[in-house]
Amino acid sequence: MRIDVIATADEAEEQKVKGKLAVVIDVLRATSTIVTALYNGCKGVIPVYDIERARSKACELEPLQCLLGGERKGIMIEGFHHGNSPLEYTAESVRNKYVILTTTNGTKAIHHAKTATDITIASFLNGQAVAKYIGRHFCDQVVMICAGTEGNFSLEDVLCAGKVIDELINIRNDVYLNDLGIAAKDLYANNKEQLHNILSHTFHYSRLVSLGFDEDVAFCMQQDIYPIVPVYVDEQFIINEKSSC
Ligand code: 3SL
Ligand code: MG
Image (cartoon, rainbow, N blue to C red):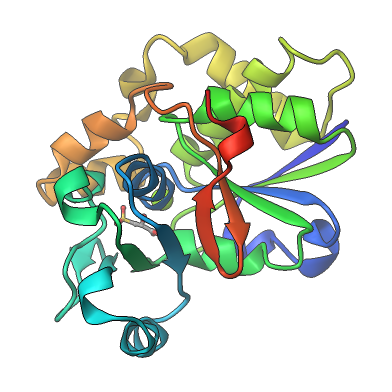
């Protein structure tokens, strides 16, 4: 199995993604929010690249059945129901509803993944489940697309790619990595018990804390609290029932 880790959404060009399994990672906070909404019973998360498209998608759905969520510059978008805090996507709020989500980097990375054969979503919250899913169902080409932050490399996303790889090599002995994959695996292996320590001075982590989102950051650093794997079907993420344990 060949795994290539890509540092930013912008670098996920079609020829690096087409025909592969894409694992999209935006730990802070989009992919943590997506898995939380799904775990809490939402019917599906519809990722949308821009705000206007999100609003028009909402008009196509029954109003009581959908929530608009997302952010720009970390802040909730005017007229939306929720921002991009996973803590907002409680069972009471999302059960039996669709969530239409647009975020600065996370949904952009998903957009770049669209030529992949299959797309899934990883975060620290569900990394082990994603590794098991890849290990059992895919044996060929995998690309991990780290969203990054506004075109720049973001350490938390690469660390999470390292987590999925670390879990995967416990299951399979045929994993071949690109250089960033090797760096991600070692970075995670050396820091898995102290994610906060290594991330506390990083750009986006610090920015979220300065905006008052420290509870979100703490929440997103939890590992393997959700045994679910989102899969992209008919333009939305749903839980892959076969992968849930
Ligand atoms: O860029 C994104 O997709 C967001 O996850 C960024 S934020 O954490 O909501 O600011
Ligand atoms: Mg991010």
